[in-house]
Image (cartoon, rainbow, N blue to C red; front, side, top):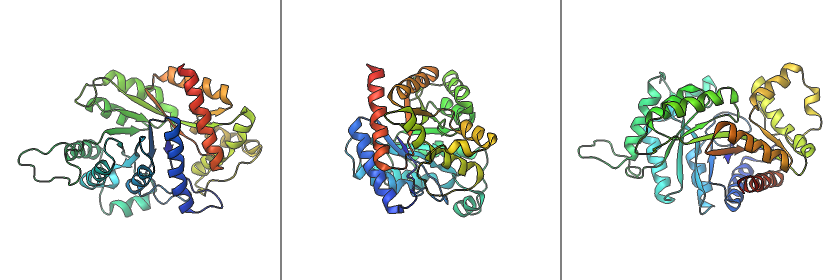
Length: 326
């Protein structure tokens, strides 16, 4: 699961934070492998800006599921700061912490400047910062002058995340697992997956490629109900495309019927990898995505307005995966 920790219309930020922990507990009970949260800033309706703090909050309320970032936007942080934060988490929750890294700022230009101060990012910075972070999380070596404490020796698993070909190429070159952001940018999914596999170089971390892809999911007992619940997602996406950000809205019947052709096309492009429907539709949709991409893992986003129906959606997805696997 990937959780953006949405703040729902009529609810508080505290509600969103505690709901994230409850949702992670449900994911753990269903057998999900990992639960990630994403770094975003200055976005109304998203409560995941203090990502490392939130990872600790979720890990403290669960027992087995891996918890991590999907991701930390590395240009916003010094590698040492990230190493210390996730090293601390790894010491508190050994064997359960993931560190997904992105190279986008995760915010608007004004907030980006507030985060970075006077730092100007170049294309060379991200690969260099990833290498520095790997070194800080590795066992210390003789003569090492800067040591992450905590952090050194924890070897927190690093994933590279991306919505284009840049991070796919870097993940292949470094022999790291790669997660493609097809939950909001599916256009280059197949290109990125093929490039990652074709250029992959074995490393101490992996001996073969390991690919995860993002999938927006809304599941319900029927296709009709799922489409209705998904209108909350459609409204959120339209807000992203038009700059009208607001808390997650309740579902609305026939929402798409009131939109222009360009608006419907924009939403469809954003959600090109979405799986929305009843159990059979969901089972077929997830199987087709996995077979088409060869993904080793699917990471689901599920922005259903009603928290109880969100949990139900996750349960339906887990049942579909179990049936497909069988």
